[in-house]
Length: 588
Image (tube, rainbow, N blue to C red; front, side):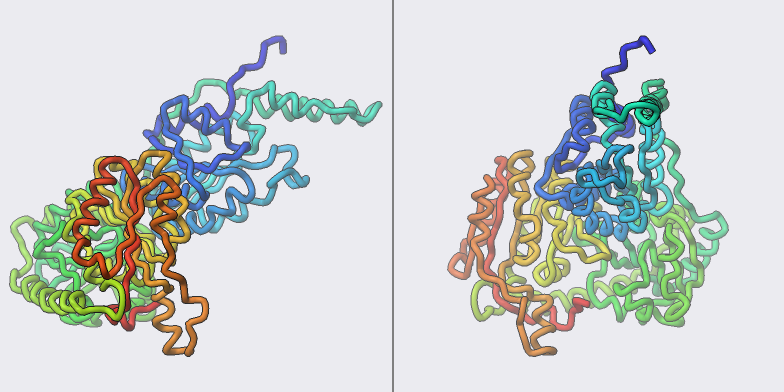
């Protein structure tokens, strides 16, 4: 050609598109297949945050997606790097988080020929992702990444996956060296091989550096029609005992969570909050009902499911009263109508965005308020039940500290801007009843997949998005094992968080049913391990707290908060006893 080939590489194209989409972080666990992407991103001012397990990198990207309203991005290497993310990607799909997973892959020429870490990655991710692509040439990088980012956020948000064969990411002169045929056969065969390789190489880089549009493509979000909103206005205005059940979808962009909150306050309808919508009404709103949901649904004459799904969390729709009018709003058709063939029937089913629907509904109902007596009576029911729960927190456990008492103390001392990450079974189930997130987007749990191990990644993503906030991880001693190594990441990346570990030396959520039903505690027993020392070893600060420290518990919590403000990740290893608070809760 006579021209010297450009020193540029495909990793730079990836970085340019990410920057143009306002991506601030890329989470990774490094590998040679993806090095060019990481180096180029860092040069453009995108922060590279490396974790100690690929699943953590994806969990962190998931948290960023939920808290920032953009796409979370994780980049991992080929083969085992990618297979390590499968659980976290499935979790993001179930939680409807927009996420881009970037994976390395063997060189285009060597796929299927036994190269290092070369497996069929596409068929692994097709069931988990809304969009999967394998880049074949450098010129495809920009349009492929733009499309993936738009698909992730459109309709029902979710994960997307792009694999980058290693020869699409390195500069021409490096790839050329790899392609140069070593001792090819003589004669015609040799010529054909040499020609084929030259041809492949020039196609790989043809048109690679032409200027391309990097800007975000439009994102398509389904909305309720005017007629649908109008029908709902009529239903709501006639209702005497309406109830709203909010799910995670109500927090999705484009409607800011605060606008949804104002809409709910103006409607005056009592609300049950689930998933990411916890905290939507602040710490103690007269409209936020936390207890006795089954009874409230029995009495309700109208139920609005705003992003809430009739799956196991609502007994598959069986808790809904056949006589109630039911309005269901969901972006995803199959979720919208789940089990409506069996256990419940929607009066109005709207495939659309829940947040913007609530805002439009409240505007159309301006001046109308739900009869005050109804939320007041539900709130009184809350007070009765919470008083009974509170008395359980004052009981002495056989040994160690009462977990309910510990959670009440932490809840009272939480900073107003705290974000709570939930990662565990039994202790975390209790925390969900006791701890009150102070505002929208201040509670992170895995979602419907019930995945253990989200703690380290969710907290890392949360602290990067909200560096001023106090970030708490509520861990069971079982689930802590999955991500305790991320204390090293918190230290290296200066993202101090506080981990509260309810240590009862047991997988209690399982043991509680396994022992009475099957008469054995096999595989459920753990030890009262010195997790606080593990945190010290990773550069954090650990505290052990048992019954003899009961009187100093508040001081220990405050000390942890102070250490955290001064830049140290803290682990509170709290030895707890057994209570019967969650008897009858399910683990299957």
